[in-house]
Image (cartoon, rainbow, N blue to C red; front, side, top):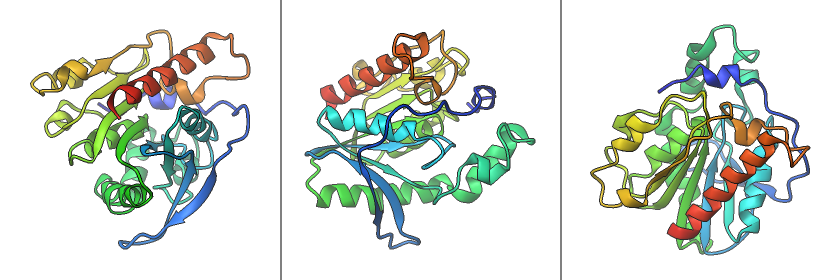
Length: 250
């Protein structure tokens, strides 16, 4: 379920506001330390997984983490790309090589097997050692795939995919917790992935909502300078729905 929409949506909008959290480095027994943006506190934690614009290029991701922290969660945003993003990795955006160039870069800098190892061996252990009793995950674009792949080991209690990319029905095979998908109008249809969860005992708790008038990446790429604008309203609605979903399942 790769999507041309990711490139067509363009660069992130300028963030409105300054993040209130801080960056820490978590020791990684399997390799380099893992930088993480952390904000909020509490026994309910959310792991946020960014899009291809990474840790520094899209400050809006951190601001969304701040919103979730304000709702009572301990939120952590790991930098799996270790300072890289699609601009540094591919040289431009959209890249000359299109989606294949993005996939090649992702496979080099953050292959899924490596990312999953860092989630469970580094991030989850950090959260649990700091008192987390229940963990959810939210993923943006590329991060939506990471959320589904992580929702298979009994540690994640709920997953949210905001305009998720690269999903396939096969990703649902071992998912063991409720999922909420919020694709944009130009994203591939989510129904094949959603329907693949239909045999799960928790399927009645799974949700999907199409933001049909929005373009891919809208929660992070919308211009938030005018809260009354359609893009800002839809982005805020999606983030609010994600927070409500975590409230039901964490």
